[in-house]
Length: 217
Image (cartoon, rainbow, N blue to C red; front, side, top):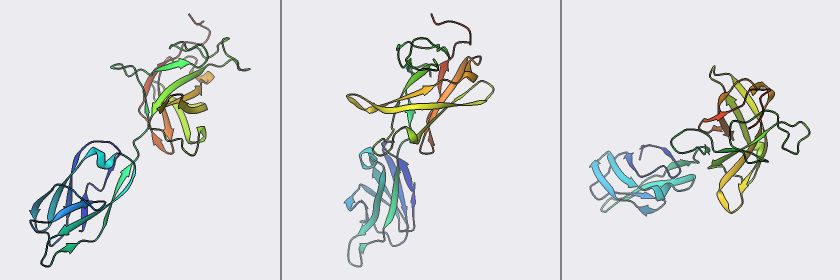
């Protein structure tokens, strides 16, 4: 084998066809994924294709690819490594709207959010907003690996302080991210919020912030 196409995929991204390039392939050559045969089509002495399923790439990591050819003169090829990347974090949205599923972390009131609120337990009285995300691995670290930001209609960036990251009880696939809204968002209105986990950015979701000086309903 000389090359694979593709050489990597995102975990659970779906079935795909793996193209294996090399030399010396025959009609009976079989592509093996971690030493297990996969349905293989002979294209030419220099190319094979193999059917790879979503189950093969269900988890991030690496897999060994080889080609086994029948005798006489057959055998097993050199090894190529296929990389399965972890999926990017995903903030949950209200279906069909692109708007964040988000709540005030104390009152559980939906948007628009006020920057200052009397209904929490903090000294600074700044609102904390709870976002919900999937595909965040917290097996080792916690909030230290998660950053958040808001972006306004002029593409100005506002860092958001991440105060808590943790799994939602009884829903291990779901992570709650609590952020503090900065004063600078007081007159911005609509923003696009995203998070970043270990250098990988999420989707952007819409969030509405009530103008400074207005009261909550």
